[in-house]
Length: 66
Image 1 (spheres, helix red, strand yellow):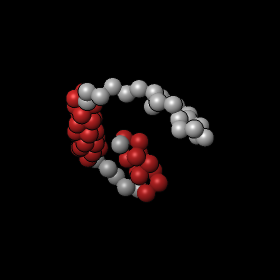
Image 2: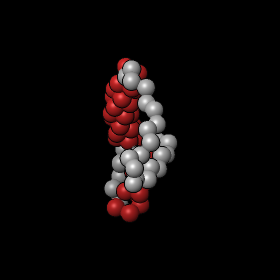
Image 3: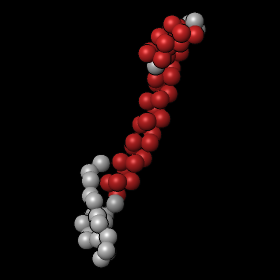
Image 4: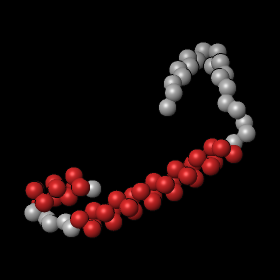
């Protein structure tokens, strides 16, 4: 948010107050935490282990880690 405000000041002559940057960063952090915590708790409750399965005949399977 600081970098975006800097660019707005330089290129759009828009003066952004530091409290606005702090507020936007805080809101983004809260949103990220709500998604991450929800995703993490869903992942922890999953009881089905994942395992590799061979591809169907005639298909090529490409595995990768995310």
